[in-house]
Length: 68
Image (cartoon, rainbow, N blue to C red; front, side, top):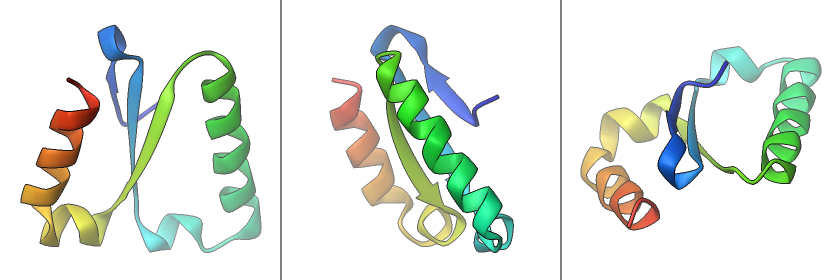
């Protein structure tokens, strides 16, 4: 399951918090999943909780470009 997907654009956004990725296993599994999704033709962008909280306008602008 992914956090957000725009199927028509083959774009996935994963929302990550530091607390989720404090183990090597979680970190490794996420990278493996990113590669598998890329092989399937998806683009994956990772967004941290802090970026979402503090840089909303920047993230919105970047997602707009990715979805253009």
